[in-house]
Image (cartoon, rainbow, N blue to C red; front, side):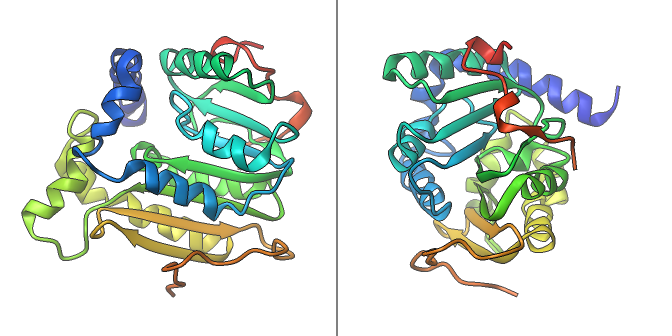
Length: 258
């Protein structure tokens, strides 16, 4: 079994155990009082969404981003939520039914193997991509699936540059149960994600958040810029898998059942 396969099995086991109480425990992630919700909101705003847009939420978990996306795209828009773990998707389905959303599809798949629908308006991943060994490939596949001017945004944790040991632990504590901290620090996956954003997308941007313990990376599909797109305050420039038509993505159903 490859290291990637072992990582997947470990993550599935962990998130199956965490799924039932994830919405509550995530408020303590990565440490109590961390501004997770405000960072999620900023990530969704960075997508520049409009009514009727289609959004792929990669590693969507229990659907914590769904209400923020729904507010932007409205009932005529569409969300495709992708996650590796059946138990997390079951909770996402509960959220869908509770809110009466009819425009959300769930797909159980590894982010690295997911066949992105073609011509989507936006791709989002929050607090997850740095745990995917093939994170650069996911960015590449997502970028290729965007329509011209479509946006891809990644929000994730990192270790602050030049940080003292105590501050580095704020970023590293999030992976304590998921992987070797030493390995995570050595691989520095946020740098891999940044390089992929710069390689695959036009007008790439990178913003350090909360003392450098998180980052917001964004870019657009190469082509005509999205009309009316503005850069968020404080956001500064620093310088492929098979696709399915959107109509063929699995309809809403428990755990992405087709």
